[in-house]
Image (cartoon, rainbow, N blue to C red; front, side):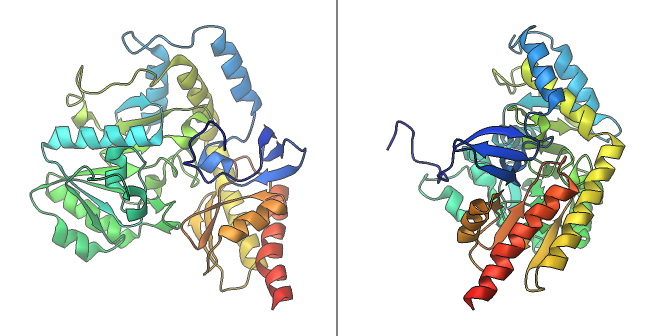
Length: 382
């Protein structure tokens, strides 16, 4: 026991150093980090450009508060909305805060409080975000949730059409349910959402906290669908490891978030936005995104070659799930013992989230470890 609360099921290793895809623990053991801090370190650990940006900005100014104009925030917002249908940004510190802001903005703009989300979704652990999350285990023990959230089966167009009435102000979803098992929105479902939003006063909130900032091979995952969100939440990869989150919204929403309507002390501080600008300069480059897509194809190809067909491979970009058809908690430990760090996506899926800068050689090493723990050891036991 130590002075920390016990709210994390921590693994018994202490990572003290990282460079690119590789990290080391305090004993000097090296690991391939296919967690990226859960889709956070998109440019890997200690990327030279990010290190330089932090050093340079730290010698200028760290914090001024949002009482004053912020040229850095304006520059970052312009980069994020460029060549999209979105027009404005608000910055905060995390994905949960981003989703809280999205929920508040949707409620205030429509004047309606009823929001539809989906089973096995995950939107964060603050009360509004937790209430939007369609998983009982996340909510258990905390008393009444924020009311007027309805959870529907994911990708069930008929259930959605039947549930939407004049009380619904917004639909909120992930393009790929990360924590929920790497399940991707279908085009049929996307079309049903489009029809509803076009023909009624219902906003679309797309949670891109995990899927955004190049993770799926495009700037945002919604760009690979027909969906046209009114609000997009983001975090994780946006700061490449430095805490920052935010929302993007259409021009129609501008007046809704007027002075005093929402705020955050640290959100969009000069250090955070400087780092995020550097991340965007790298990740939003078309050649970089093309490389992410190529690496994705390579990773999926290698996984399909190495693993029997009973292991289902799904996902996009470098957000890949391996459905093992059984509990994977022990497999995460076995991978760690072999020098590969993974995270689960639900009880039966291994989630692969390497840095977007991962090399093909590192992919080969990771797949070899997965083959060893999933196929070779299983075969030897049987």
